[in-house]
Length: 367
Image (cartoon, rainbow, N blue to C red):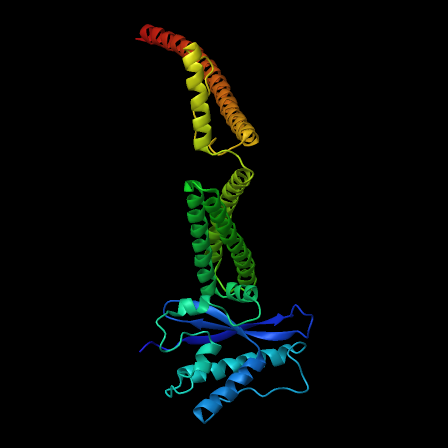
């Protein structure tokens, strides 16, 4: 039998519906399962519905009482009421989850409320969670999950999977021989990158929240910042590659001839010219992986990019040579100073040798 889920409600969020209706408070329920930790957001009315449903299905109310509804105060303008209700709702859920009597938590209403898989389902909890958070806005769930140290790592792992999916789509795009397949793969890569970008923003904001709230140590904060920095670099690289692929796909969609058509056309031209004149000067060069499937504008842009890269390499080489020259001049000055010092030492040695000779002569006279 699997151990019960560890349930906490660490924080709350204020949610404003898009239809400009009255805002309300969402309670961020964190569930820690053996293989995954995730967040579910619920409002108080959903807790009340769950309580009445469990009571009707089991026949008796759950082991802990549901916090009563307040008619004179609102959680929107009363932080004390919000905190008290958050604490009591957490006690309510944990009482059901940790009770020896399983009747309440074995009901479909309980498992649906927490997005747990059904008892006869073959899927795991992660698949159930990924099917939906049971909240009006998935982005709000990601924001809530990014503010918890455990679920933050789960979101980071999900972002890395999106990056891997984007790489697979881009590789499939490069290997595609048909325009429709290439466009479909490029679109899938864009979708994965957009999702990963949203998660990256949530992770950055959540880490800042945890840093301000002192929920993690300084060392762990620095480690997670390094993870976000590496993820940001990966996303920028994939964005550049995806943009290049998108431009290629657009050019292909406009009717740019394929590599096979180009090869056939240029091959026929070369063959005809060879038959007429023999040796050919200035024959077209064969296509490369970079120029294949590019039109004239794309080739010109590629050439400009290569020239810019060469200019940057020349500038870097110029900096290295300038630095080496400065080092050589410094070494030259130091050698000259050493020569001057050695000359001074040599002159002083001559003076000392003269004094020694005078001392020896006086010693001989005395003896």
